[in-house]
Length: 137
Image (cartoon, rainbow, N blue to C red):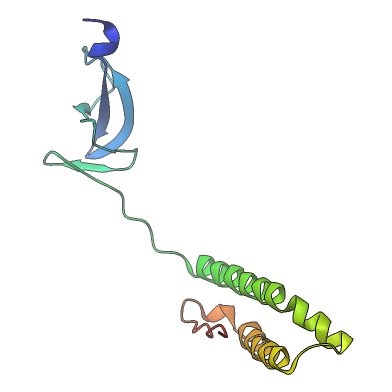
């Protein structure tokens, strides 16, 4: 049997936490005090930070977003929506300024501009309790 065939994937566990994953032949190695190894099956996906108990691995729980992160995300979303509105309405705005816009397009542009006003007036400090307006059809 070749060395490559004897290698396996192992999770190194300390105090119920995965502290590393290694490719290893399973021979006796001292990984440190209190560190044990668990061989991983081909379908087991484990990373540092997982917990291990009773033969099972559990992914870490994502921490809840902070208020600052929520506000930042709301600012990003607001900017993205306003950029999208500008992209959608750019041609109609040019047509309007040249006096060549059709009545139907002028009505549609008005709906989009009302939408832009509503989005622009969003107070992102109210995140995560923001009711984003609906986009015109």
